[in-house]
Amino acid sequence: MDAAIIVEGKNDRSRLSRVLSAEIPILCTFGTLNTERIESLRKAVGDRQVFLFTDPDASGKRIRGVLRDVFPDAEHLYTRRGYNGVEGTPEEYLIQQLEKAGLESYIIYPDPPLTAWPKE
Image (cartoon, rainbow, N blue to C red):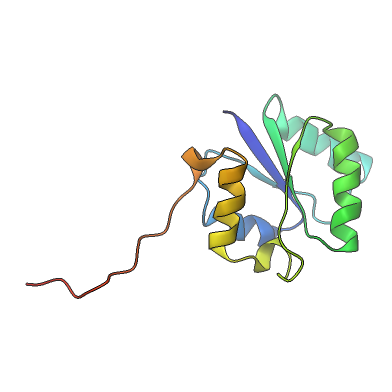
């Protein structure tokens, strides 16, 4: 699958890039969606499947609404209200949402914790 994820800001992009392969571009709106920014996003997305991942606050909902019109076939990813937006979402929850979206082949899973010290 050739996909791209659109988020609001660079901190959201940074958070997602810790659990996603660089094969998936993570594009930012930077909080503004004027005509120039929208065209820039359209150009960057090209023919890729779009995933929208915005914060659950008023600004995020407004941005999601505009992007829904620009990318009507986009899939929507959500974080919980109790988290401080996408950037404050625990990696485990981000991974769950990416798995639900069918992006598991692009997920960078964390190493499991050591349960005991290795024997020498």
